[in-house]
Length: 387
View 1 (cartoon, rainbow, N blue to C red):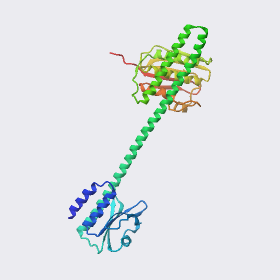
View 2 (view 1 turned 120 degrees about the vertical axis):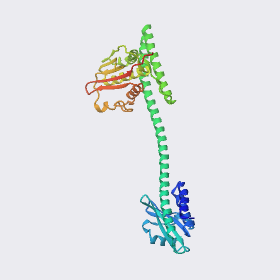
View 3 (view 1 turned 180 degrees about the vertical axis):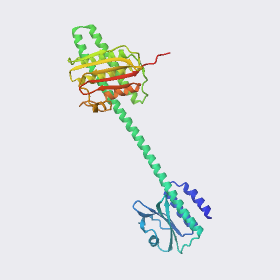
View 4 (view 1 turned 90 degrees about the horizontal axis):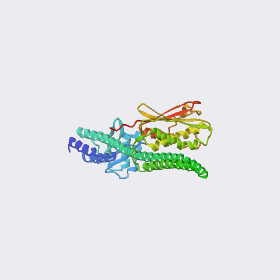
């Protein structure tokens, strides 16, 4: 086979090789059939800086039985390798395998007589060695890339599963937090109901029952949110919300808890506002949550003011207290999930409020400073008018 045809045939074969070993096995085969050698071997420079036998033709099969230091490349290498091979091959020729400036290994040609390669054959041997080194380097890079991609894909799948579980845990903890905020008023309203029943005040009983029914409806909606999340349903769309009416209802839900602390006053400054885009039940839960946080911040004395208003193309509700306020380091983190300054807190109340407002295209602003109280404002875009 001519030099050109041999190179073309070798290129065609090694181009399809998927691993460096396939390239080297083809190299030693071509070395024996084309270059006139009795046997051939490829010694690879291993990570241990040793030369390791990785491919051979017409040599002993035990490839793991021979290795030597990489600095023996030269006449010493040929002598050691001939001694290991035994009789039949008393002469060697060496061709370095170099790819991108790095020594990959050595191609050894072995013969019973001196290998006086003609100029064309010597050039072919050098070209085969260079092509094999380049192909092996490419195959190794491709194999490493394939492994890296598989690891990346596995990592992404693991991260996706982990994130799903984290979100499920966060949602579950948040829902339990909301349910607790709903159940506390139920207990208080039931106590009020019992007393009113004892007094025979039928009108007051009916009023208390109506409040309990509202609380139960909100509780059912919270449970529905958890069910929707577990089914991976899309988030519910926004609906037109009467901000003033919803905030008024939320104030009444929270009032029973506030009334247990006579030194705390709950003021309502609610004015009619154009309908906004939100969800009624989530908005009521958020306002109850903010009132509860203000109540805890006041430490049994002070004033909570709940206001509504319009501006900037939408409507807002604000819950303010005249308590101790927050230092900057706490203010920066209040919307982070699981961040809390309370010993028994979940750190999810304000995170859930923030997520709810942002989900409906709104924004949350905070004004606070040590000794100056806290104002939390939830702004929602106005509901577009039909027609």
